[in-house]
Image 1 (tube, rainbow, N blue to C red):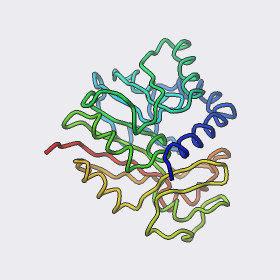
Image 2: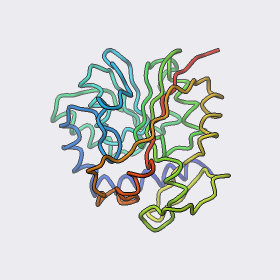
Image 3: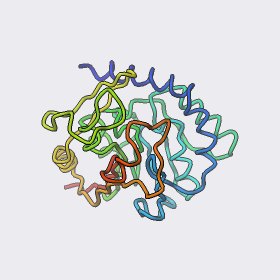
Image 4: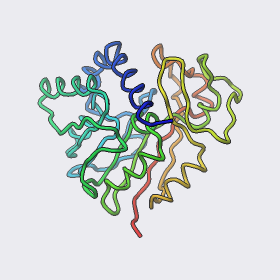
Length: 254
């Protein structure tokens, strides 16, 4: 399967999503001062994933409307957002004009950014490249973009929730997919996602000279309620099993 076909399908899907909800949500997300993680909105102050980002050069791969980059800019980072969907970037530019928070935006595939090698201290992906681009393509690009000692932080669906998910939502309390051979997933709404087993993630990161520092499996808080938009999993499911996970790795060039 040619990756360009998958990229075009995903760009078309996110153009639709931008019209349906991400453009409207951008106003809320850009207004937030505190960083939160995942669909349950777990505070960065609780998880301490990023630490002090002040003065860091950051690239967000698959930035969408770039609210995560805006959060980083508010904390003193120098972000650059990369996304393949023009409609999402247009929303981001409008929010820049409205808020006065400005940083570069690049329209490009997250695995072929065209940005200079060794230009960043931190690569982040929050449900961007982390699920919408083949990791065998975007992880090498993340390594190329980082300076030695730089970090990679990405949020994705957990491997477990994917294994428990079929074309009907919400996720089941039993396995519906085999773990061996998992990689490319086509969903009914038209998008193409990419998910690996943990062992494959570890092998891929190590092959690209990353040292894994943390794997944070997110649990829905006790008062969480099932989302109407993100209904692929119930709150009760996510209180018992992780539906999202954050990976933290550091580049150590040999």
